[in-house]
Each structure stands twice: as structure tokens, then as C-alpha cells.
Amino acid sequence: MPRHACWVLLLAIVPCAAALAAAPGPDRAACEVWQRELAFARSVQRHDAAAFAAFLADDSVFDANTDKPVRGPQAIVRHWATILAGKAVRLDWYPQHVVASADGTLANSSGPYLFENTAASAASRYTVGQFSTTWRRAADGAWRVAFDGGDSGRPASDKEAAAFRRGRRQACPRPAAAALPTIRH
Image (cartoon, rainbow, N blue to C red):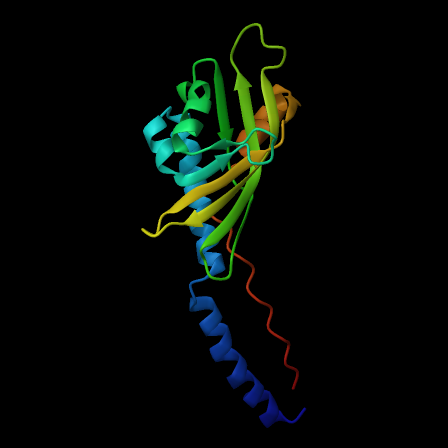
């Protein structure tokens, strides 16, 4: 390739790469949802039913992947009352994957959860599993839960519970930069 052709190609690529890096879009939305998911989990850890309810869309559906979905914030808060109280059971989770739509209005987060039964008579103290949450950006700009579901989990050991706790990342992982073609002279 002639040397001047390399410069022309480079001049065409650099502005495009800069525009992609600066553009708000699915990557920015995914990081917003990442932080929102962590805050949602903290509302449960802090036993704050009002904060928990504030994360829910007016038409939210929990246990969306089951035969008995729970619809609407009031019903969901009632359904989660024991978990929100945190006296006999505790629930924690965090995102591992978040993907947002190109227009930044919908996102899906998924990752592990840890359910702890604190009752002395519990057959298994810990249960681990996977959750999936669909988030929708509301008219006020806030991300709210539209759908939430997960698997039924499996019994876990103290070692697995510790591994779950170590796995939490507070910061949204930055997407890998798009690879630019190698230009050879």
C-alpha cells in the first residue's frame, strides 16, 4: 500500500474512533445499570423496603420466569417482606454481565445471588444461583426494574459463599476498545 494511502486511511479512522469513544450509548447505559443493580442489592441488605420499592417500575414483574409471576410494586414488596426484613433469611447479589440496547433505554443485568437461611434448623445455610433483571429507563431518566427472575439455586458451602462475596466488583468493567486495523507501511 502506498504511504499516502496509509495516511488517508488513518485520517479516516481516527475521527470515527474518537466519536465512538465519546458517544453515550449502550456502554454508558450498561455502566449506569451496573451501579443501579448494586444499589438495588444494597436496599435489600439495608432492609429498606421503601428504597427497594423505588427501584421498581409501576408495571414491574418479579418471578417473571415462573408460573406464578408477582406483578406491581406493592405486591412485590409484600412478596419480599421476609427477605426485606432480613431476620430469618438474607439475600445478596451483584451483576456480572450487563448489556444495554443501542438506544440506551433497555438493559439486562445478570449474575450470581447468595441466599442465606439463618435458622438453626435450616437444611442448608446457603443457596447460590443466577438472577436476570430487565431494566427500563423511565421518563425521569432513572433505571427501574421491569422484569426480574432467576433460577431456584442449589445448596452451597461456606467456601462457595465466601467465593461469592469475593467476586463482587463495584466498578463497571470498561468495554474493550474496538480493535483498529493494523496499518503496515
